[in-house]
Image (cartoon, rainbow, N blue to C red):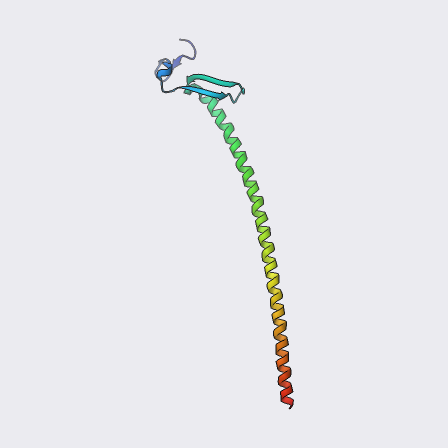
Length: 121
């Protein structure tokens, strides 16, 4: 038996196109970068495909981490904007209260003054 022709699944020579595992693969070998365009048993391609899968997962992981970092920056920016807006709102509310309190004090003083004037007459 020649190397590469023996099928461990059926325990005889490969039947090639009659077998469901016989597959055409096109692409690039992740180890060498060389183009791949061949028919062979899918089980034979497993090591190469697993390596390619791992490389793709690492790329996806890096992209997700980068996206996460951008979202953290954007969320922090939003938090800063909302805090600034809340501080501005709180400050304007405090100014209104101070003005209202001063006006109430002035009105109370006027009433008291007028009442005192009326008491003297």
